Length: 258
Image (tube, rainbow, N blue to C red):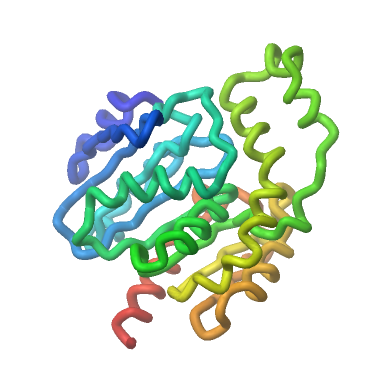
């Protein structure tokens, strides 16, 4: 979906705004609804994907009443230099954090789906004072759960890339690098000291449910809630968006009680 189509789809709502930010040599593309709320929800998509994977949340009256919303095209996807992959989670965290620095007065809750999960974890590790909460949705977090799938090395060749759509080529590149990236993060988990909610389906065939157990082990018990959805697959943002909205309000209640 291009931005004009997204604006047309959201014309009856609060008013979609589109932004671009040059971060070093990378264009970062994002969309937001800024209604001067105190808290902003930031949606980080998986692999492949783009900001408008979350467009239904931008139409959800239940959260528009209380929050500003922002979603970003991760590097290499959507209109963030489409086709130019960025495999470093540290670099991705820096680039997205630069976008969010444009909204300094907002409390910020990060919501990451699939590969967006380790991205928001890295953001919280590297910028611990910038965010108030994390919602992990079917996140790829445990390096031991990253299996080497035979076809990925074929896609990573010139011949394989020729026959592969560009968004899947970018996705393949960052997934090939993910195990090493997650291993680099292992000593950094202790830096996360904000409330976290992990949502994981038992029937997820793309991200094993054991990732929720890993998160439970690495995050502080007193700050972490694990929600296991029986029979749910990987695509929670579309099949069960109510769980994400519920998690956001659980976090707000937690803020109020602290």
